[in-house]
Image (tube, rainbow, N blue to C red):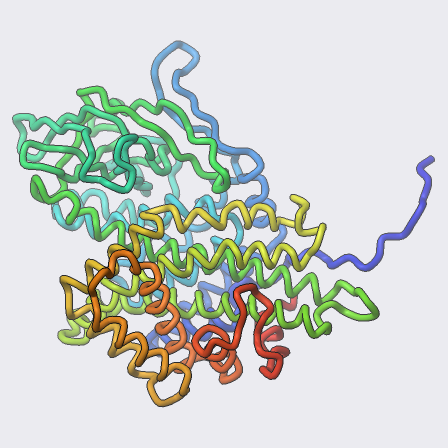
Length: 552
């Protein structure tokens, strides 16, 4: 008979059985703010259904199972035939089915499509971030496909479908497909101009065979990939399907899967093209980088959204734990120092979400025939996407680590879910160009596209006069922008300032006064420390914490 030595008390219940969307006022307010009135009821209803699923015990368990049982590579079948397939835990397929069914690969070309998709992506990325990778790339591939209308006619309906079909097959026979991307190589990394994969043209117009390798191929189980290779006229983009129109397998050899720090539910691979790998040119020869950059920009926004999702989940878990955990004579959430930490985490999370959703709204506006306004939004995206990608993804890891610490030793244990969030947190800073790549992209925009800076200054200028600390930060930024000498060496510093000013302006315009006041004081006014939990004690910290709290 088991001995009973103690009774378990003072433990927070699991944060489960709640609506991930409706319990997040920052996200719900953003959706209301950025959608046309006639769309709000429909989108809200869809997001409530998704939010309830994402917070359910069953879907949370899918996320845990998909992460605990990483994908496995099968190079050959039982008979010795080369198949190069990746096996996933059934939970992975259930997550993808749920997210594809919710329209998370469908944004382009429907009213409010980017805002509704961004909100859904934020919700489902809190369950298991790994499955967001194929969702992101499939969604982002659409602009590149549209460069070739014949390709788009075949592939876009399947890529934007609400049907998830896991088995490989010809695109004409599938109700839905996933798309991946293969750009970087061993010798080049982010320097894609160092790519050595060769593309030799065939007799048929637009058809080529590829020879070479890719060091990182994302989501290798996908139905097709956008690939960069050197054609006779230079670096060119190609669509490389896994299965050809006649049902035969394309030559696509998966050498191995990467053993990654986090993102373990998702497969990343090294692949080889053997000289018979068939590809269809996308865009003109020699203009591959321009063709694929539309996809890269969209996936960079998803890096921002994915990091915002991790930050929201980390903050929610920390506040939930501290609301139930008692120490030193009362609930942790009531202790002044812990309240300061939680408020700071909530502040960082809100700033990330507000910025990500504003950029999603810019995509919606930029995709319209709105004349000057659409042009301004496109110009804003040119600079604001790399700015946001740089800063939000950089803030994610220290923020998640601080949230884990709020749970103490409990947070360091796998069952809490916090270690999975922490392992995932650096990914978005690395994926689609690390910090230096983003900062240099900002510099490039400043030097070559004056409309981008004009759009940025117009955006932050909409908040001028509302907070003296924001006004001073804008003036100081203008002084720094006036001197571009030696800008590359200080590109990170400048990009950080751009991000903080933009976040501050958005919060001043749209957040509750106590949130905007805290951000301007700590992030722009210099009245905050380097670590989280160093907000001025005179702020309304209780309001910030309560705004982040989830009632399950």
